Image (cartoon, rainbow, N blue to C red; front, top):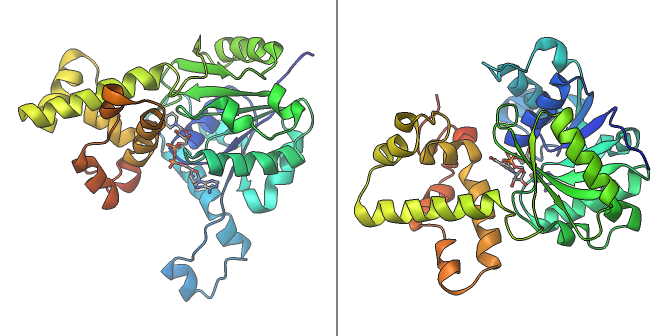
Length: 308
Ligand code: NAD
């Protein structure tokens, strides 16, 4: 079978989903960007007498995502004209539109059951032969495809983008044992030639390659920091700006990734390891406290650094 991606759908308009949608739009691929419907009204909306059924409210998340794309500056990729290629909507009303796309990328919360629940709905509306991929940071691709139709399983794989998707070149492609080899070959070529990425094919093992090494290294760094009394500023200096890596200092990276997402990724590895190795994947107590307080990074405007 020959594949072609003329239109894509990105499911989830958070940190990664909005960035991936912007990247696709900027290479000229029309994108449908969907997310959940908000389940409560803001005080303003209540005062206006709106209900959750009002279309204005139902499309709030998608509209918010579009605004976020506009603010994504400076970016060599996001332009006003490419924004017109992004159509927004929500899972409840617009899932049937997935029948018109050639590639569906799932970019929702890092939770196996939640992702599987969405795949069941996708499987009921997609056309046969549509490629479906997950941006999961490390959940088993095989486990996510379990219970789905044979056609879904043949066309399902991991496509793991890195944050921010418009700048970072790495794309991990993770086939499951059920993924058709033709789909892997096509997505590898598409990733390199159209998305402009450097593709690494990873085995379907917990956290794949980048997050297995990355999470381990980061958590060891945090333990050493606590044990030896280093400050956040010191660690970020020696892992960031002062050695020429302005975007990748330890704590700034955690803020950009989101501490909640990092917690899920660390847990993926924790649940699949044991003994001494497992201990490394346990979150330090101070990070659990931050998450309990909602200080989960840039998206909450407060993490290790305040974002004004
Ligand atoms: P995020 O928290 O910014 O966004 C998650 C989105 O999922 C939100 O828009 C939310 O509305 C939606 N969502 C939440 N619960 C849902 C549900 N029950 N059903 C459907 N949608 C729901 O998360 P993110 O950082 O964009 O991460 C999304 C995926 O990408 C995760 O699998 C994550 O592991 C992976 N990822 C994240 C990063 C990163 O740096 N943050 C990097 C690579 C991969």
